[in-house]
Length: 122
Image (cartoon, helix red, strand yellow):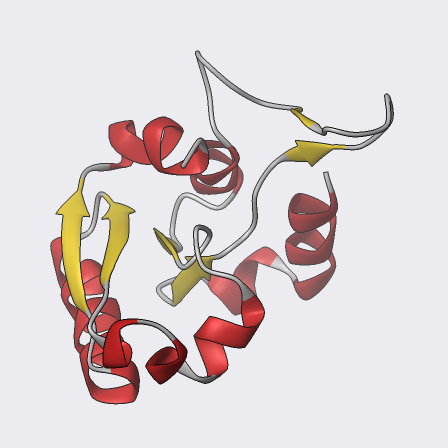
């Protein structure tokens, strides 16, 4: 999985105590289109990242938003959006939610890491 590989390259000690926003989806294009999920039902990419880097504060967000909308939220609904925000660390979720509100004027739904599987499939 590219996310886990890149984070491993970054080094666990560099991630410890940091908020890590996981925007990736675990798509598998090996069988062509449409892609399938390489991880689903009993696990999620966010959960795998959290297990691999237990001292990081993993927050899943923005994986349901395309890049054009990320950089220009006003393209849709005048920038008034609801974004899924999932993770186990309440302070990290609040920080990400506040960042989204400041940068994009969005509102957020906040769930626990166990909800990452649902957010991954959105």
